[in-house]
Length: 179
Image (cartoon, rainbow, N blue to C red):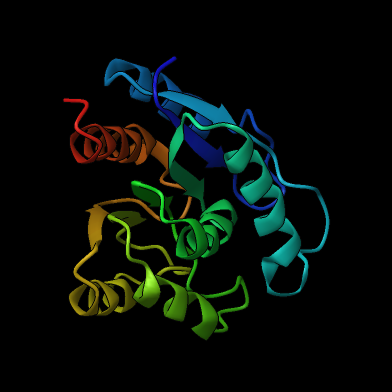
């Protein structure tokens, strides 16, 4: 069985969230498969502990899971998990350093600073939840963090979703030695 990528959707999203389905197709082109999992609906647990525990259980039960990819809220969960489990690679699609109300999330900034696995953040150039300037600063401080900015895209990527997904799949293929 090929190496697998554990994927989590954005807040309230299902396992069949279109960006994850599209990423799974692209991953198959570089020799990877995916495990797409939905998070429980409703309000997040304090510190995202319940969500991280769920993701850890899934990843731990499948020895073929070697990398993670999360969309927005799913990325927040998987970034926390990556600090505990050291996957071979992590992709964050639209990482929200701010809440919808514009409030900073210093704990998420600290998580990105602590990551030790190769990590790619794919971010829309005009994403108000993940200002590129903040991410550039964090990437400059953490050599394991790479930033791919998608011009003309905001948080949901819109018409630039294919570009974001292709960047993520290509990077994972190279990073994991699949291409």
